Structure formats: structure tokens, C-alpha cells
Image (cartoon, rainbow, N blue to C red):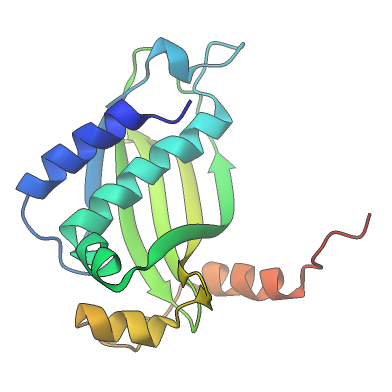
Length: 176
């Protein structure tokens, strides 16, 4: 089940926090609960992605993006994810989820998100998101204009740009 109670908490907390300038890191603190773990008694890989939604949602609130999306009738969606799992996360552990925007291209915004346990990074992702309407994807230059940001993205790290390029060559639908 989706973590609706945690989402409500994030909305409540982040409406009261200060604004977050573009390029800054948003931090969400979480504890691993029994319903977050899998049969191996560690944080479930699917739950990791659901919890990362919370970090992006908090980021959207603090950066003023959620308010702008609602005003325009737009909504955000995940369009791709690359995940690197490196450390086991178990029941009761306290985590810090760090979320920031790396940059954007014509269609997608690229988020960098990582779960940290103290000084150790446990999971790292790059998540490609899109802002959409019922008619399709909203170009990022239009989103930047609405938000008052420079439409020119900071340069994407090479590994992110290469991943995005590789996704352009990936067949859709899959060939089976």
C-alpha cells in the first residue's frame, strides 16, 4: 500500500519549512517500519521507490512547484529510473533521503535521490520525471517560465546525459 500517512506528514511539515532554491538539497528523514521490509528483513526495493516519491513531493512543495502545477492543471510523473543498491537497510534504521534536481532537457527533469544512513550512502537513484497534462508532456522551457527559472538547464553530469541518450535508443514497446 502507498505510504499515504507519511505523505500527509510530508505535506504538513514541508508547508511550514522555508522555500527551497533550485539547486539546493531537500532532506526527508525516515524510519524503516515493519511494513517496509521484505521476506529478507530489509527495506523492500519497490518500497524504496515509493519512499522516494515522498522526497520529491517535499521538494515540489518547498520549491513552489506543486502550487504551480495545481494552478496550471499539470501533474508530475516518473518517466524512468536508474537505481544503484549498495547497502542493506533493515528494520528500525533511521535514514536521510536527499533530493535535488540535477537538470533537465527538452522534455524531462532529472532528480538525484539517495538514502543515507549516517555518513554511508545505501541507495542512489536518478529519476527522470515529466510534467504532463491530458494532452501530453509539457516542455521544460514552459515549466521553467511558469516557475520563474532560467529555461537553460545546468549541465547534466555525463553519466546522466549518457543514460538519457541510451533511453532514447531503447525499443518501445519491448520486442516480445
